[in-house]
Amino acid sequence: MKTNKSTIKVCILTTVHPPFDTRIFHKQAKSLAEAGYDVTLIAQHDIDEVSEGVKIVALPKPKNRLQRMFGLTLRALRLALKQRAVIYHFHDPELIPIGVLLRLFGKRVIYDVHEDYWTSIMQKRYLPRWIRPAIAQIITVVEMIGSRFFTIILAERYYAERFPSGVTILNYPRHGEKGDLGCDLPYCFDAPRVLYTGNVTEDRGALIHARLVHLVPDLHVYLIGRCSLPLAESIREVATPKGNFIHLKGVGSYVPHTQIRAYYTVGGWLAGLALFPPSKHYQRKELTKLFEYMAAGLPIICSDFPVWKEIVERNECGLTVNPLDPQEIADAIKYLLDRPELCEEMGKNGQRAVEEKYNWEREKVKLLELYGHLLN
Image (cartoon, rainbow, N blue to C red):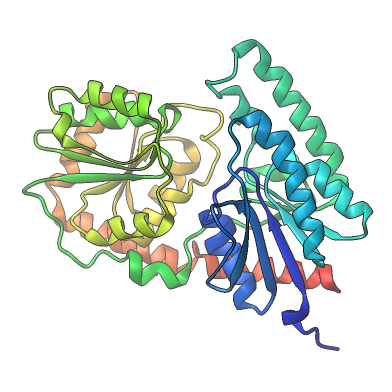
């Protein structure tokens, strides 16, 4: 007997991520709504609204992390229960206790694992070094115990080492965005420009990217994503006296996915950057921005972590370098500057790879199959 999906309520919960998070909203929530499910997303937001078929129920923005972890989670539970959903899908480890309670109420519950929280916590600068191992251990234990109650979705392949029964659903670009992300303008080599998108932090190479203005004459560096005010000041200080060659968008504020896409469409970019310093947290990730750059037709210049190197070299869509070697980075940028035809070829190779294998349409099938399995 066929199920009428329009009568099946799905409630997605996050207390950490913004409501229009790329994975949560633009990929999963929209895909479920397009498939006919009645989708509600509970997240920090200013107002309740309906966007692209998804009902957003607003959580207030907490004053600090402790208020978020304790006060906001309880409020999220109350709002979640009001939805009377059939499936609950949550995205943050601090919501594991809520997930367990929902299971005890007889609900179907999915835990979407976004991060390797052990390595993530070990590099949190706002935490004293001495306490990081203890917090990481607590979250690991809570995850291991809580995972027995849930269906598990994994955002990275290697998370299966911790959750062998998890279903891997990767963060590849949506097929429908390829036209928006496509770069139709010719490459502009008289004023070279490179692009970084996503959260701007030191562990994601912010200061390495800032130093690029000193390595290549007339190079403009665009950093598009949330950046704290103190870090923005450090970036400008590093770039001095060429501060006008650094372009920051998102100082003190979240940059929506639609605005990031708009930067891709401008065209004329020499390359997309991901020059992260060596880190246990990032070196095994299939970094989402690499696939977005590929979809946009941008050649890639990224750190030579084995996983990233394998993606870039296999698809012949960019160059990998030692992120701690300024001369190697400079040589890579100059190499692309001198070879516009190669840049165009790399861009097309990346787009072809996204069309054939690195796309959300393939991952969406797995998501919908998982939901169908839960309902059956």
